[in-house]
Length: 187
Image (cartoon, rainbow, N blue to C red; front, side, top):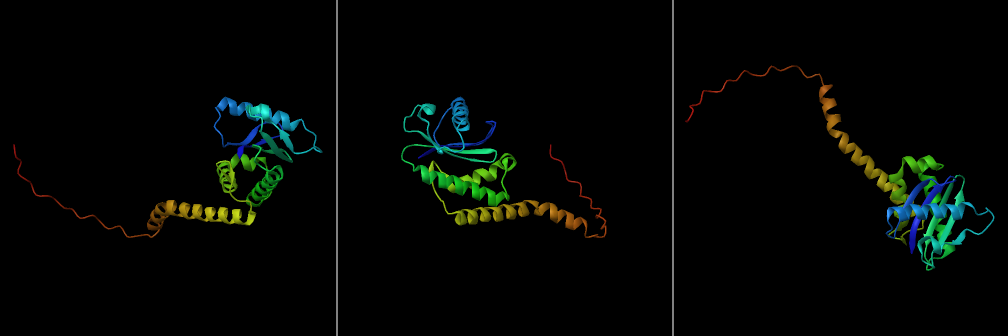
């Protein structure tokens, strides 16, 4: 099972932190700090798997990571997960981000957090891998984008209708002068 997915830059600033196991906020921050410390000090030519049991206090806890340009993508998993399978999942995640953002960079993760979480949700939910086929993931994301555009069109419809009526140049029609009869008062 995947315990957490962390993405941070070369300076240790978290850009994405998704925990599938409950930890208090201070524990989450501790995990991010220790994970960055362990992963960032490793040489680029060493294995991308790391035993990380002391981080959470669980001996079967492993870190599987990839370093792309200025970002570290780290999946914290238990012993039941295949390290090579998780490396492949990281690659699918990064390639999907790259397709969605056209050359993904750190700023995309900062300014499009909701979209990044949606993409991640297509791959992993509740710590379990849902989908690894990038074509299928991109199809679902494109469907979501179409829905969002339709909703944006619907929410803007009243404003567009008001503007259309305003631009119709309707003649001024005087309002009729209607007076109501005096009604008796009951006291």
